[in-house]
Image 1 (tube, rainbow, N blue to C red):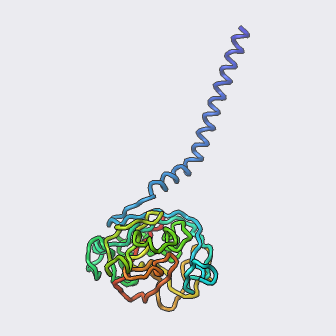
Image 2: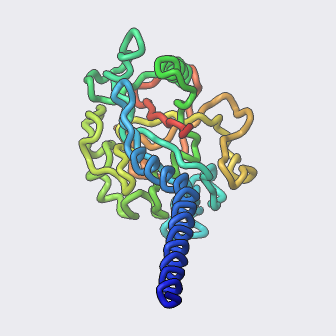
Image 3: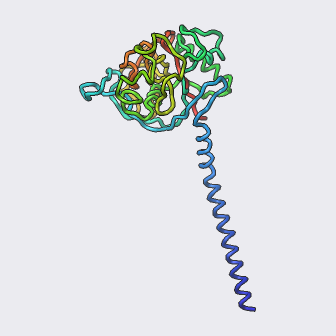
Length: 283
């Protein structure tokens, strides 16, 4: 009888330990659940298409080398003064950026008229001023009941364009390979081309080199890099009356298509070589 009693006591203790272990495992899973949910959400958000068909790619937070060195500092470097000093910049939050430049069809989904010089539904919209783009952004935010859409900062643009590279172009140093990645003076026929016809950069973004210049949110100052913060720079509080544009266009030389090259235009000016792509903040 005593032996049977001891046996039943051992069975009870084993069962009790099993229940406690089960509770512990469930507790750990509950603690991990927010992280697992966040990872699943992040995975789903790798590519996002909005209500007017703009496709976005999720860009991770990270650090990169922004700008370029002068030829006197580096034999293969070819910087203009406004690209210096070359420095480490951190982008502390992930964000979505357009896989392609905004097209004329997408522009017309919200705006009354297509101002583009080179017409085509899938061609990038151009001849739009920085001010015009703000109206488009406002209309898109209203349509989707959000405040998440905007132009990229200059730092976000270069971070996305470089896609982890430290070379002149996202694909390397050789300008002879540009015709595979971007529309410029040597292959464009001096006109825009439909989006996504050439190879993307390593993060899946098309036409970051050439086709049309792309507006950025920042004011332009030639000497801004010497005083810019290293974390999430958003440009000077006030510039010299011009806004930044990046990436080069259908008539650019190879030098202008470098990832670090900076350009600018008055915000009220609309040029047939200038369009844009959007950022959508994660909210």
